[in-house]
Length: 204
Image 1: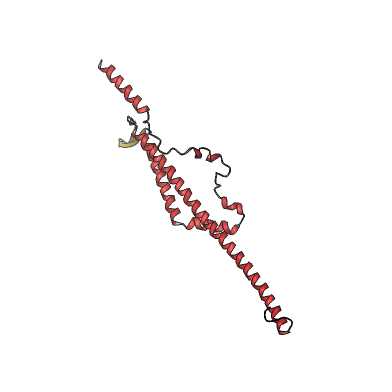
Image 2: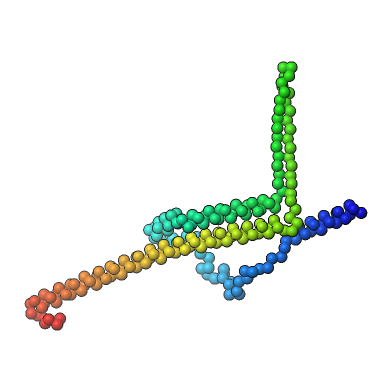
């Protein structure tokens, strides 16, 4: 009778261990976001700025990504989150340990060798789902760090591109202003000569 009760208890505990706890979804998005991924252009290319075909812009963005300290710290956070995820995943697997030893004893002119080895395995039941919950939390943290890092990269890239094109636009405006100034100076010189020749009045 005791064996039957123990077997029933073990089966009940195993059933509990195989049933993950239900977690409420607190991140439900509005309906307008359901089809955001299917909108043309929703996916951002990894190196979107290369579509402009400007080598100077490519160089500037590469330098900015390499020198930005926030990005370097973000990479470290992503690696830390990945290590935590690996550790949490390993907790769900059996742990195996082993060892080996050898010894010798020389007597009567010959050697006597002996060897021994051992191998052991252990597995901890996740009865209440704590280990799997920790693994899900580590996976969510890892994903969040990756998204944060990608968002930071996009911010740096877009800031460099915006500044670069703003400088180009200002240079073009400056060239146009210089050209207009040269035209105005030519007109002024022509009118001045005509005035000196008495061809036009001072009002011109």
